[in-house]
Length: 334
Image (cartoon, rainbow, N blue to C red; front, side, top):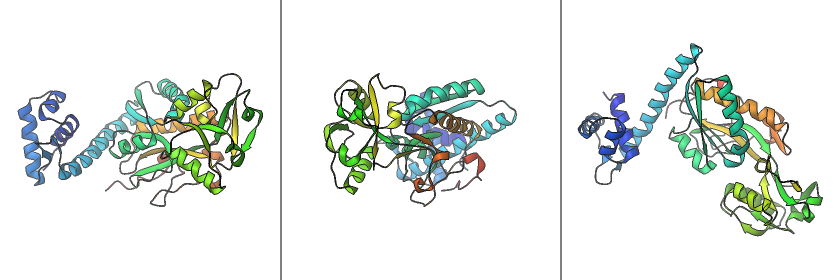
């Protein structure tokens, strides 16, 4: 029978791409690594490591995916038992999209550190496109992402909705408005993300609906860089409202754009593993912070204020509104 040690060795070889590097990471010798892999391949009845290319074979990838889930579940057992002894500890790795990370990350680190000093939170700032595969591979416990997420292995829970706004300097024509229609906005040159990004594609879809095409002063890949260039005076920019939270220089205005659909942001996890106590605790902290802070942020609505029309469904037709801790285990198999 396969054992956990053999699976851990397989994952180490996959990560470090050589037997010697895996041995060093596991604080053992290369001959032990080779022996574990050989026994695992005999028990599996398949070659799991392509020695020439130093990578997993298709069969090896299947075993590695299962092994990562086993690692997560074993750690969850330990974490759950510790939490029952009122000794919540461990490490929770959370991915967060950049525009949300800039205001939510300090608050999450502060609140979790204050309430649960034995719990460490590691935050990865990345795009939704980068975060989802890490969730599927169980390299992240949670992720704050753009919705919808079109992956059957991912379960999502809405956090907030945010308007798309134009930021403009006080002396610009746009700054004299409290809101502007999408058709009127098309008369101005603005900074936008490039075509092919989720944000731009959603905006272009809305623009086609009203039969206009937005005029770009420049296309910038990265919403935070986009905001920085706008604040540096290069041109007005179209951004999600959270990108301007707490950073707008004096004299700049955020102008809501009518007939642009809001952006939905949610909390995501791998639906094939049962979340342990530490990730559930951090998820609860994120929800509390969003509820509390959204009341002070213009153009942002927490999940409690979302209308039924904003429910987003993934490919399975299911989209969660109820926090994970209140639901049953759900699917944990393949």
